[in-house]
Amino acid sequence: HSFTISTMATIELTAEHGKCIAILILLWLQQQLVFAIAVAFARKKSGIDAPTLYPRDSEIKKLNLSEKDIDSYMCVQRVHQNNVEFLTCFFPVMLLAMIDYPTKTFYAGIVVLMGRMVTALGYYRGASKRVAGGWFHFGEYYVVYLAGKFAYKLINEA
Image (cartoon, rainbow, N blue to C red; front, top):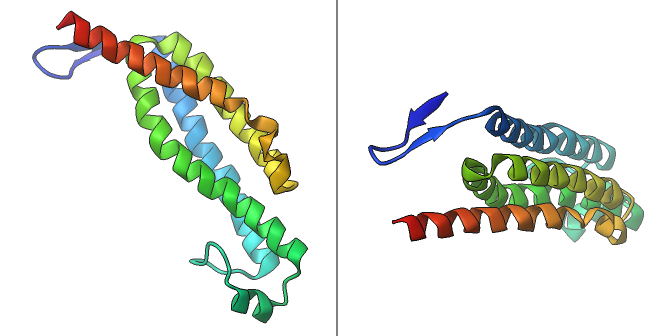
């Protein structure tokens, strides 16, 4: 399959591009289902209703929440919020990287997907344990490198 972006460029999409798209979808599902559902359960357990992201002292007192209750809720909420912040920057860079380097981007995307899950599982056990999946940054930085390499190539071909 191919499509024309402008009169200057045509991109041929391959199975490798499809794999990258699949990783993007899995990252989205991880965020919108796995991490969001965890927040819904944490809200139900704690009584902290949306739209509150982080409860104020008065709400904590009103709900009679212990420090452990608050820490548990906050860790689950931070996994979700941190991933929202991460994906808004990562998705566009991954899309650019996959145009010219789909296979490498796919494998780096797998590292990111798995690392984000390990980070979440650690974070659910406590903020200090979130570093367990920090290796996802290797995939992230490699994707940024690939996007930069693609930009450099385009600039120098002009």
